[in-house]
Image 1 (tube, rainbow, N blue to C red):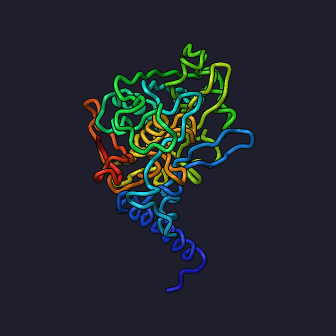
Image 2 (image 1 turned 30 degrees about the vertical axis):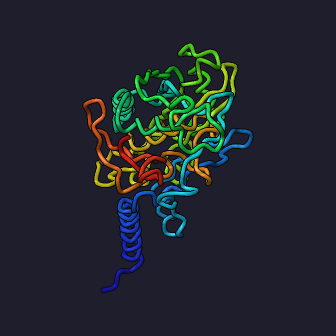
Image 3 (image 1 turned 135 degrees about the vertical axis):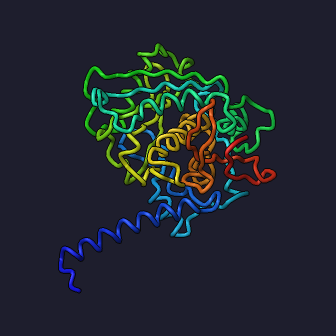
Length: 333
């Protein structure tokens, strides 16, 4: 039977769809510690500090296919301390301030991401999942791998969370890193965090509305975190796009966890990294620049976890202490 041009096009589209499905399946069944190379430090805008990028599913799969997987344990795979910035190397009493930026959010949240994020961040405090952060510390020598009770550990409980709907005006259509950084500075002023000491344990999550994400979202990254200098001291902040806009490439139906799974998988990844490396890359990274979340991103162990009495999909995090100190990806600590 002849298909003609339209039939050929349908065949190409089907092949493309099947390819994406196979890609998601392949990453979803990868062994612990295999994926993470595609995430890590990247310069996104001239004159701006390095951003720590959360790889897309496709980028992670490409790295795996090219044989660039992380070693599952030992040696250069361990996270080590890099001295901190201004005495801050981890967040010892984490506070999360979430900004839903721009009037584009008004009556425009088809996947109910704002409500999901509010519930998720509120449930993190004291959880066994986020406790993995607490094995990392500050106030120790650069190069440290195991804190062993030395220094001051990253915090987990209580974790302060607050939200701001900055809806009075339009956010930039596709905001650049410098514009997202400026919104983080604005948020610091709004929340009254007007000194370096007030911001030492704070991360600002700048969430953009559907269709209003920064360029590169869904193709180059799912989210990223960085820092910016300001009159209020150095600020740690995250660019959190409208995750479901990217579909399967940022976690929709990953490991059969549901169409909205990527929302909390990605948000949790960025939260954990901001606690252990608030001012990239001066906190805890491995020898190639990957952080606690990058090393276990889009891992087959990603699953639903009960946090604060509710269930959310989250990825495993890297623990130096796992496997008798050889390290590995874990869901609790």
